[in-house]
Image (tube, rainbow, N blue to C red; front, side, top):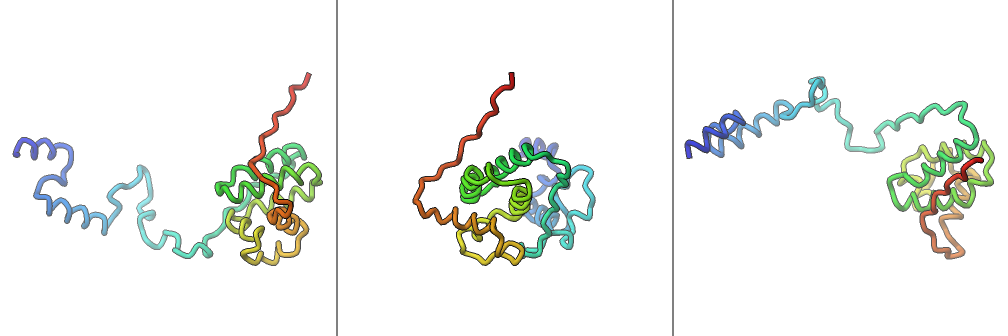
Length: 172
């Protein structure tokens, strides 16, 4: 037993006493400081006042990237990608099929409005489109959201699947 104890003592200073002492030491450490600090991290990160609140409504949304000067084709391609890769399958399906149907006929101003809608959280867009939650005033009576709601109703009972990405033809 002493051979095992001495070999563990070389790797971990906490394994010097009994099992009870090991547990009590690790509990004591976790209450006072971060037992696994990140390299070069500020000690302020471990303080409780720097953590996010439990209420998600109080979290600040990240600001969208500045995309001034983006041409129409790049905007259209980016919107197609962003409708497919949201992170929530339900929202991905509604938005990607909506984009396949409506994006080719949208003008630049409509695409910019759609881009702003995509800055909203996934579940908000989903619940607004299936009319389970009231949209905020900035989206409530917009033609874009009305089209999205109509699309989500799927009154034609169309079987919807994630659309294939179209590849550009090589230019000769």
